[in-house]
Structures are given as C-alpha cells and as structure tokens.
Length: 283
Image (cartoon, rainbow, N blue to C red; front, side):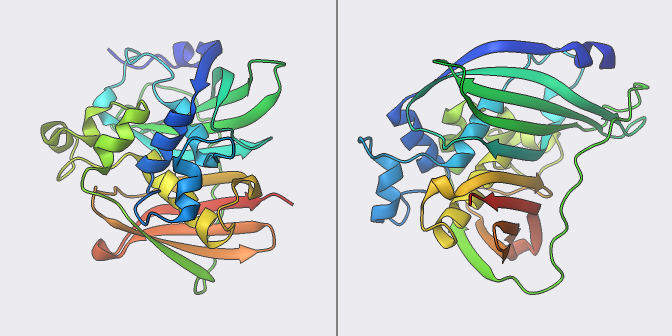
C-alpha cells in the first residue's frame, strides 16, 4: 500500500471537540518539566485553582493522532518535523474547544526519500466560536516519497544569528519523561518500546518532539517572560535531532524586541535537537 496524495489532500475533519480540565493542564505542565524545582512559579501551573495558568505549548497536544493511521504510510516511520503555533488569546487551563483539521501542503522528495505533510489545525471556543489559536504541524514520512506527489512549498525556517546567545536555560528531562508525556495522548510506541525504536533506526526510545517543544516553551517562559504565559503570541520550532529521556536540554535565546530566536541543544552529544526556533512576544 502506498500513500495516495489526492486522498491526503482531501482529508478534512470539522468540529472535533476537545475538553481541557484543570488536572489535564497540570499533567501537561508536569510532563514538560514543571515541578522539578518545586518553585512557586511552577505551582501556579500545577495546582488547580481559580488563578491556575496554562502553558501556551499545551495547544500542541490537539495535533496528536489527527488522522487515522491507514493512509499508506508506515506509522512507525513517521516523525514530527516542525510545529508552529499562533495564539489569538491565551490558552486557558479549563476550556471546551472545537478544532478543524486540513492538509495545507504535501511535498514529495522522491523515491526512498521523505514525504512531507503539513497539517493545519484551527481551534476555537465551543461557546461563541471565538478563535483561540492556529497550529501547523509538519509530519515526515521516512522513505515514503516517490509517489509522484506534489511539490508544495514548505514553511521557511528563520535563521539563527551567527553570534553568541543573549540568554540560556538548562532543563533536565527525567528518565521516565516519555511515559509521563504520553499521557497527553501521544501513544506512538517509538517513544517507549525499545524494539520499535531500534526498528526505526534509533538506539533506544526517543522523547516526543512535542515534549522537547514544551521544554523549550518553559525555558522562554522562565527566562524572558517571568512565567507570564500571556506574553507568548507565537511559538515555532523545527525538530532536528532526537532527544532521549534523561537528557539535559540547553535552550539558547537571541532576543530583539518582541522577537526571540532560539535553539535547543544536548551538549552531552554536541547535538542540536531543536533548530530555527521562533517566539513572538505579545506587545
């Protein structure tokens, strides 16, 4: 079975309901590094209350398992390549939402090469249809190309400055981080099953890209935003190398006014794991 680009192009799902509760928001915060230092700032995201805060990157959990897995690709060979988020209003720890999904772009790199699929997610409040956010996820089907598919334009990354970073932050992932993060809904065995990971070409299970994305968001929240999530208006990242549970992620930041460019590294392997990161601060 091969991927059918015409079928992919026609995929749309409308009015999918999502409900967030305070405990789910706290779970997400815990799964991306909050609580490790047990600070008062962390507790504002972890303890349900009338003033509980939600992390902007939590919106990305709505992109998980958007479409069925029987469209011709090997699900075990699918990777998350890039995540884009634009917020129209702050994410709330409790909300009833509706989401519309569609395929924005397909890019075929050729036989035995990757196939890129860009999925758009538009989210609004269930009551009043008020826009909340828009997401764009780039999925990569390894060796799924060569289907004579279209060559749609892919998102263009923002270059990282060729100078030393203005700010840096270190976040320590836990050995059990993938087991914790998968409770947000991403149950791909690549992240917890050693045999599946080896079959996909990795030494051992890799951490979810969206978990690393959350760690990067936490780094900017702490370092630049003083834990005020309303200051983040856009948050984009390109996943460039695997993170393993237990890794220490160093986030380097370059700030110019309302724009923050960032890059995440695992210094122990001299590996850039998130590249071309871009965060726009609310003015």
